[in-house]
Image (cartoon, rainbow, N blue to C red; front, side, top):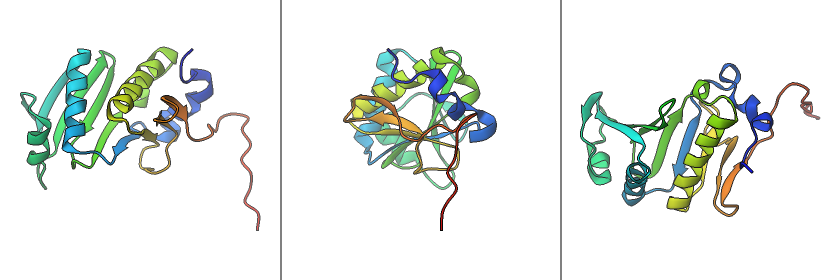
Length: 170
């Protein structure tokens, strides 16, 4: 059985409500964690492309990627776990792994399962939570890899048609 069912979460994947590029983050990381991510991408056989300031380059080590970060340079790793789904990892600092996914590419159970597998693999390899929040709302995750549960779980109640939102009381 899948970690998440499309019918239970599809409202979280509505790009017109939540923005098209949710924020996905792993906090408390190190250069070594970035290297684990690079090794994971290569070991899974996922297609990838590395660039620095938009210039395509050969994939380097995580240490070199982090060292290249500056006010004018953000290393970027584009990863396609399947040809129709792109994940863009941007190296801003060693202490967090940040990446984007496009909700328009994640419609339906099959594509949701791809996202879940990627989040689970990253979380398991790093032993850290991998959290997905609506675009521009870091710190308010909708779902993510829960280390204790060992799977991807809902972290916010989906709001969809028929949902009742309680009004605040004084």
